[in-house]
Image 1 (cartoon, each protein chain N blue to C red):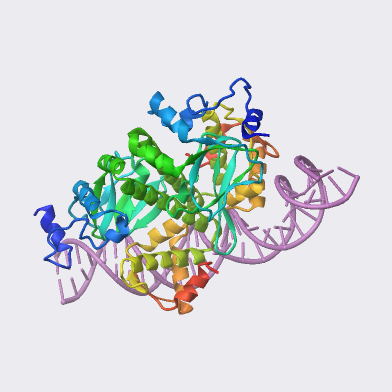
Image 2 (image 1 turned 90 degrees about the vertical axis):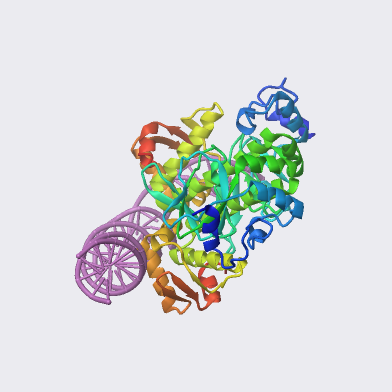
Length: 247
Length: 247
DNA sequence: CGTTCCATTGAGATGTGTCAATTCAAGTGG
DNA sequence: CCACTTGAATTGACACATCTCAATGGAACG
């Protein structure tokens, strides 16, 4: 079975037989809006679309040689790093249209591992090619600087969350973040499935599994949320916003 | 008093009257090692050296239009952002040779404020010029990608610290970080002055001032540290490493 | 030489972690 | 298809690290 035929399995629309950046429905998220049609085609040439990876498999490991950054096409991944004492820290979740792997640029080694939370397809963007193309295409260069800068600001938001906010505020903020990322992909902002485990959520938010679970229960009791294992329905988004310290 | 003459006041060596990137003693930290002599001169032309800013003054405010990134020449700054509920979160401390302001690239607005912790001189690097020069100089482009990537990995380290580590581990990690950054600048790794207040330290580490103060006292009782207000002397760096969860 | 902010120390309150038991969901093999 | 196994999720009781509140001491600055 070739990579190409496996890709087809993941697509709703069978006649969309040739995926490229120009026709990808995620390109408004992952690509610069500013890129001209011509530029998109050039970018398209360096992007490699490989076969999906199964749940639990790694896209790359911490310490691997850095070669590429990746754009998520479908599925979801978590990134995490291992501390010197062997504990793990989840540093991010990545959904379709989002870019990961940029933390490997500084040392030519991946600073974190990326693991699929469900069957996941990615576009691989070799960094050498991206660099060369960026030098020729100012808008691409700018876009990539912006993507990295966004990663920095998002990390800073997480820092703030971990440093200043209660368990309830942290969980509420994560739910709202996933909700709005769904909305950006034209999916439901109020009903969705969490691809990650409670353990991952707790790890990401600096909480124990038990605390995460208790917060979900409390939110359910308040009728802000309907929780059924990984299925989430937001019943009162304003209520959750009020918990999330947006006021 | 002109900017030039004020600069002189901050320099130990009066005959070093014309500062440029080529002769700056910080260039091994702040600049790409890979840059050729010629390239350095080109970079030098876009860098603006302005007069020092006084303690407490701002280099930029959160929400300001983003124009430039900055390299610290002398002194120290803190970066912080204000949450929706009005609380502040210190996101980083910046010492000579280090670059700040990159979080403003993604939205063309500074995502944090930068405030001088003591009299501080910076090199301003207009981002537009940096972009143009990067497109012409592959090594500069790469270097800047690396600097941004490093910022990401450092933020991830802080995330891990905040999420997983005790008060003692956090404070120990900060002391070790400042110590090694001093060493990189050929200053003492064991005796130095903390330019920031206990409030800033606590804010950065997600702790209250009181907890920070108590940790310092405990470390002193263990004879790992000699603390005299902002003056720090590391008596037993291995002891501090052991507290910092490096084991 | 007062004023103000920063730092330290103590005593008590509290949110979250730890430990433990139970239920639930998913996958496996008979 | 059902029993079995395994890991995930929930819930409760208790412990403890850190926060909060409060008082004092010390440094910096006009």
